[in-house]
Length: 118
Image 1 (cartoon, one colour):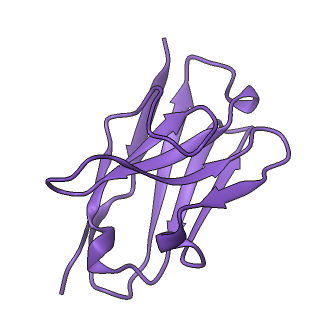
Image 2: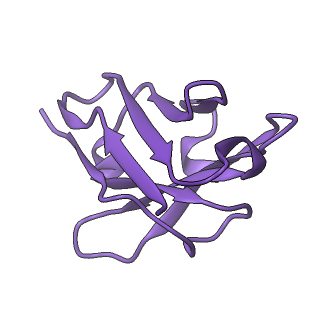
């Protein structure tokens, strides 16, 4: 059974940082590309970042490029999202998702809330 469990969200002031984690189980983690997806309050889900399964190549939506870093540990079956210089528009529920591409489809976890506010 595929399971993705996110953690690390919270309330942070503008300009602050958070590191999100996603623990994966129930599938061969190192054979899948992984994504972070977010859903702002009252809006639809949006793709944030993707990391390739093998060569670790990454891609980011324009609004987070240079501020967020996606990474993975294929030994621990963990996915991470380091978020720096957070802004109020980054406020959302953040989900890790299995699979390649830049969309929002596929298996998600239960999410972790990130709120950026002074």
